[in-house]
Length: 251
Ligand SMILES: Nc1ncnc2c1ncn2[C@@H]1O[C@H](COP(=O)(O)OP(=O)(O)OP(=O)(O)O)[C@@H](O)[C@H]1O
Ligand SMILES: [Mg+2]
Image (cartoon, rainbow, N blue to C red; front, side):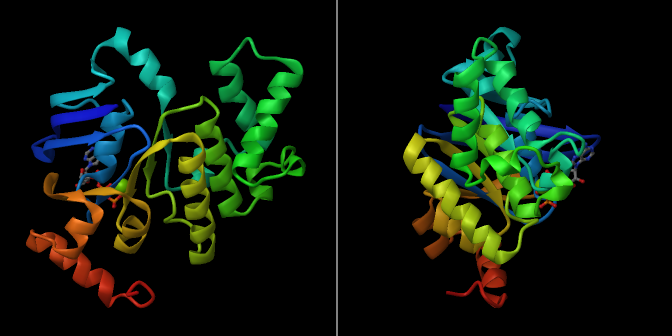
């Protein structure tokens, strides 16, 4: 579905992405690992159309996203989830408004009971209940806010979610709940994920394929089991060593 081919991106004189290529197929979960500053968010933003690549092509079902006329389908089918759920939500909007906005935007013909049904289905998908609908973000926990962001991302009925460190703002127990939710949604809807993280343990648990970024270059890429059990690149080895040195991440 998604094909990133030889993408580069500069900020000033700095080459932040250098010849990055990857593919995400239907229902596939692809992890992106790398330390802070390695270019993970820049890659996500290029795919989401928030950054414009300086070189290479990004295509969706074979159509380049650089072509305005070809971008429309991708705009609905590729949806983001970001790291900071509170910053992603409008603080003055209730949960109902945050969820109805994408529904009405993408499916303006759907009204009344059917619209209400879709709203309930979105709440169900992220284990929120109708009594959350009238709350504002400050009346929700950070984990609940991230579930609202996830529901918002699901509203357009996407095929691919680009998740940029979606668990980093959450407690470990809340992270586990969200991971379960992502896994269930993937099984139920056949969604694909590009899952950006600096947490090797989470990537090992969730993803089928992984790529490792260092200074904007892909230094390791392949099936998770292969890349993380026998890393070929010194940088991947050092990431693994650092993650094993961290308490709680070593099993
Ligand atoms: N809009 C921008 N203008 C200038 N430089 C930028 C911009 N966005 C990112 N950069 C630089 O590009 C490099 C990669 O940043 P990026 O945010 O992609 O890294 P990251 O891997 O997502 O890091 P983190 O794990 O901290 O989120 C960094 O050196 C950053 O300072
Ligand atoms: Mg980032």
